[in-house]
Amino acid sequence: MRILIALIAGALFGTGLLVSGMTDTTKVQGWLDLFGAWDPTLAFVMGGAILPMLIAWRMTSGRQPIVGGQFPAPPRPEPDRRLIIGSALFGMGWGLVGLCPGPAMASLSYGGLGGLLFMLAMITGMFIAPGLGAQLDRAANPT
Image (cartoon, rainbow, N blue to C red; front, side):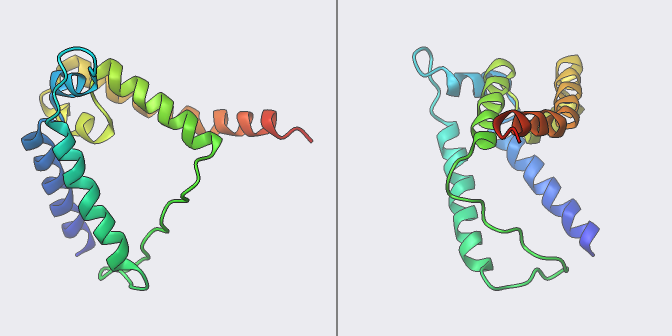
């Protein structure tokens, strides 16, 4: 049952990415081009994602998921060094390539070599990040 729900949710998410244009790198880069040919349409996509998530966080307080496990804790409201560094790296990648992890996965079926290279670079970064984070933590807190 859990796999079926995950499959349906993933298919719905991927379809939403395709329909909204989030897998179109030129549309994403147009959204990020504030001082050029700015395309504001992705603001509606982001609002359409943020508002339901806000409601979902409120509705899940004190409840258990239907298919087991636990809901994740809400994120901490205060930014820390890791969040700021991660956000900066995410933003640079998003601006340079026009893809973030969800749309990159959705675009694998048609993205060609560029989409595949992005996924390989993203996966490499995911493997490097824990070790790099530990080094940054040691550098920030020497004993």
